[in-house]
Image (tube, rainbow, N blue to C red; front, top):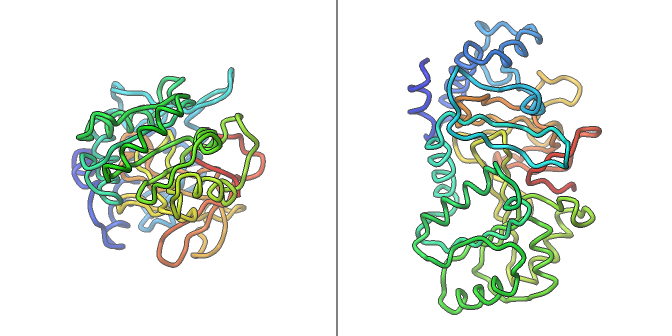
Length: 329
């Protein structure tokens, strides 16, 4: 299957059979055009000609984005997204051939879960991300802010009072508001200000970034809910190495858009897929990753529920800390 055909069929409501068919086609394409993925597949002694199900597809360790150029085909990157990291630490690099594909991806994902961006006021409390270059999350928020019909949408660093006063105004106007914040910054805000804004979508992403002691998600949400006057805290699940995102509307239970799927692997056998309800390593299929690798093995621990939703339970022991939206439970 040619790239353009794969590209044209990303954003669809797949049946289970259609999803498997597309995944196998994408695997065959990336085996042919991605040298690192082909080497990895061969090392597992997987015969690509015999792959006919998701269970047979190898998932590339996400850490290889730090040491290798993970691309399917030869192209000039329109954008290179990079992960966060401490000084001197090697970071992941995601080479994006077509930035329009990323924009279509997060726009379609947002519409799937929340509606039209122009209906929202977007407020972003993301100091750690703003203070570095190459963040895919910042790019996404910049575009959502641009697509908003309200000029008050924007970023905030440490000007918490300005954010508080704007939230008061927006509440009085009955505006649809989404506040996306890195976890430690939301906690900093919550310690200084309280607002009763039940209609607010307060969404956390990231973590403590070394700014605070680590806390389990339940503790964080118990502090944030009363500070904003909301019943639940939403969450975003994404990472530098992906184009797509999962979202949670509360309680740390995430959903994926139709072109993204979570698969749980056995901790001791990377080619063994676990049943729903069993905990293991989180594998991700992201059909948006046509030009890098769509089949990634993360260092997250999680499980899938009966309805296809999933939760993240922590990190695999001895894996390095990744600057993505994960709080250890």
